[in-house]
Picture 1 (cartoon, one colour):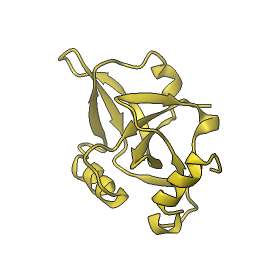
Picture 2 (spheres, rainbow, N blue to C red):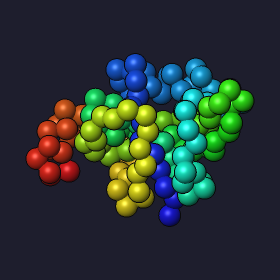
Picture 3 (tube, one colour):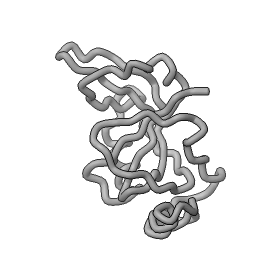
Picture 4 (spheres, rainbow, N blue to C red):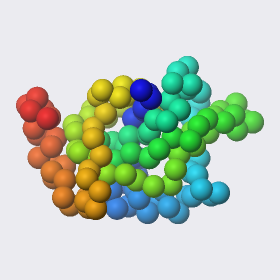
Length: 133
């Protein structure tokens, strides 16, 4: 089972804007995000995804392509330029990125679903605080 990671969708106010931003930054079929360190468990992340946190909720994922040294003492985290909506799940904000085990990753929304079909983010956040989702 692949290992995933989580990251805050900094500067984004909606899933639609995050999707648009990923598409705008796509170059050669991938988006490159800069990180200071290559994850120690990078090999386990092959086939994994980057799960996006927006407003304290995991809202979607972008499949991981890999990692690459950018030649400036940092690494590129390469992801596919698409956002796959997932069942919303409360997730506390953090700096940088964190690992996410497969067993803890939320399921994708059903094919043909749109973001509006999911539980509203505020509701998911409150239910998460109560330990109900």
